[in-house]
Length: 308
Image (cartoon, rainbow, N blue to C red; front, side, top):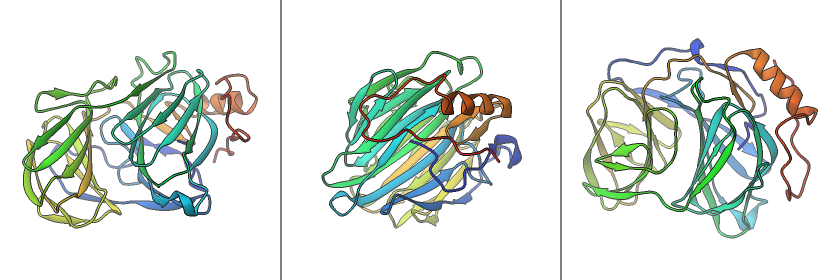
């Protein structure tokens, strides 16, 4: 997915508070924008108070949207460098196309993982029926692999486990001895939780990881703190467990990872280390000298905005 907020700003990982070595409860308030006429996007990361959580450097929640009453999701071909895009749908289906020739529909319970490396372009479109609701995250690639050749992998399923009344999809990383198959390049975790019943539960955590938790439904308490769907709670490092109070069918996203020690610059759809890298990528995209072509998309490609 593309950074589609009207004002594209440069995000520098060093210009906000560093990761907390101790447990904290920091509320991160989402920003909201419209994609097209009907689709609501909630931007969670990057945020001026918290640019990254582990290697996770971008998080958008889109929808829910009744597709019969709108044009749905239509993201024209656009480029990426230096990151992995990680797509998870809660409802609805999205058609992915990319410059490698991949054409893949993603459904709930599946992961599309695109590794941009030294450059790739792609498009995304919702399929016309039902309701669309989902998440897209970006993972910053460490310097040792960020110039690798691009690739795309579709995972038709991820491991699922039941823990204290919660059904847990292990999307990335490992929980309770269950490891996700998704190929990532930093120590991290991504979990989708859904309460099977009203429950008060304790989830094990890794103390060397920092974590963030995002409610996808209402009436959720984390460590006794009520949080709504417009708020991510940053938890810091140093925790060995997490207390959750969830009503039946509540949904939550939990992400975390070892604090990312490299400085990261994010602008538009590029994750880089310097402004010069971003300028070169922008020129290459706008002048069609890199990133390839996305075949089959029914519309024009995106052009990069002007850098601030």
